[in-house]
Image (cartoon, rainbow, N blue to C red):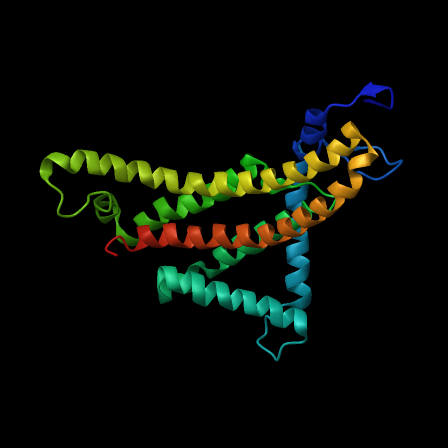
Length: 261
């Protein structure tokens, strides 16, 4: 199909919308892409915007002084914070460690949620569909699993967590190898799970919309309801992936903070 004098490529259409770049395509009629400063990439700009939005929301609506909540948004934010603190942090890490790591886990949940939701707005791009972004989040979790755990339980007890109890001596090296391998796989799964889910959902939507350019307007009546359904599903996935990343991070950190359990 000829489009604006050039051959339309569905593959290029997909990569153009999900790939990182040094220009911001606002995806609005008659507005060209905006070049970004050289040191910045589009997904890095999305992260700056997300942090700014997160700071504004908490400054505007969160009740830091402990007074009576000002409205429904304050109630909603406080309910999420309390849920993360009580049902995730304290549940996975215990009372003392859970309260200390609640700010970290709340940061995970809110920043991932905002980045996920921003990706569903045509004006923005999906930073969490970039493995570099999810890898950076994973490294924070991995840092607490290693450095944080060593500071808490000591190097000897940390290394002892990789030795399975009641294992025959001749199987101990194999058991240690499997435990060490599992230790590195767990945070890697965090990175891949978030990246793959966000990228996959956008690929489905973009593929369906791209088919209208390939096959013509005749398939629009059948495609539009499916796109709307997948889009609504992606909103649910945005919340679910933020929740899963937060829960698994708390669980993996808790396993290293309390190896005896």
